[in-house]
Amino acid sequence: MIDILKYEGKVCVVTGAASGMGEACARTLVELGAEVIGLDVQDVNLPVKESLHLDLLQQSSIDEVVSKLPGKIDRLFNCAGIPGAPRFSALDTMVVNYVGLKHLTEALIPRIPEGGAIASITSVAGMGYQKNLAKVKELLAIDDFSAARDWCEANPDVANGYLFSKAMIIGYTLTRAGQLAPGKIRMNCLSPAPTDTPMMPAFYEAAPQEFMDEHFQAPVGRNATAEEMAEPLILLNSEAARFVSGVNFFVDYGYTGQVFMEERPGLLL
Ligand SMILES: NC(=O)c1ccc[n+]([C@@H]2O[C@H](COP(=O)([O-])OP(=O)(O)OC[C@H]3O[C@@H](n4cnc5c(N)ncnc54)[C@H](O)[C@@H]3O)[C@@H](O)[C@H]2O)c1
Image (cartoon, rainbow, N blue to C red; front, side):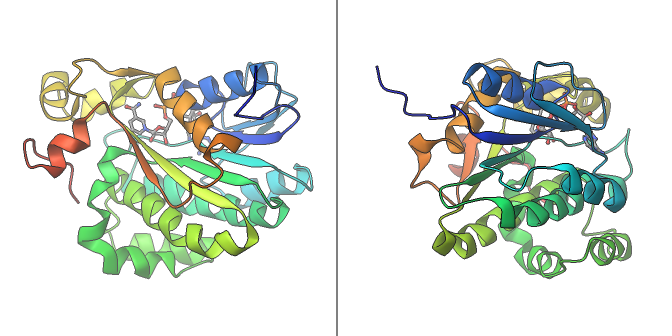
């Protein structure tokens, strides 16, 4: 039997490892033989090698975690995120989902060796990034955490919370993939359809479940499970995907196909 994923002994950092897709990802990576370091604002209750408290809202917390992480990291999985309104402000959502994710990722890139990879969870909610590409690029060009946060605060019409934060993850991934390729580091993102995790009730607060199901549910007729997102994410960051970079991987059982063929409305910015 051959192992095409090759996670045995790999140092894997997983954000959002306490719950939902990140928890499923970290748990599965442990089972695949990886050395997993779980990061989350909540406690991580998994048999990982190490877990650290991380608050992506605070630059100081990210910097502290970075100072405790090993000098070599084979794979980074950015799974942490918040659902936006009504539970979280647009600004906090921008910071946790994009500004903090980018700050952590950029701090860790120098520790990722050739053959390493980064995979981030974005959302089908970010699919409108091309419609607002000028603004996506404007924010992408700001590297400093506080300056990026200030830009979001000064541009509330654009930096509208969940949708734009997810569009930014796509823009960030597609931009960095080409830049990182000469150093043989890959970067991809994954866009889940609605998935039954502890985050789902928050989306039903923003829009009723019937509306969500009608407009956004995968055409297979049910929400996904956390594992149905974690496993394709693990595939993206694995040796089996060694020539895959700069991809926004839709994991939605045909939903975006219907949107792109104008058979269903899409989540545009
Ligand atoms: N559930 C869905 O339908 C759905 C659909 C598309 C995309 N997503 C995205 O999938 C990812 C995983 O979400 P999930 O559905 O598993 O939800 P979840 O709420 O179960 O998991 C999110 C994790 O992020 C952590 N987190 C939140 N704020 C943080 C912070 N400030 N610092 C560090 N960690 C923090 C939480 O503690 C939690 O463990 C998120 O990025 C989410 O936006 C979810």
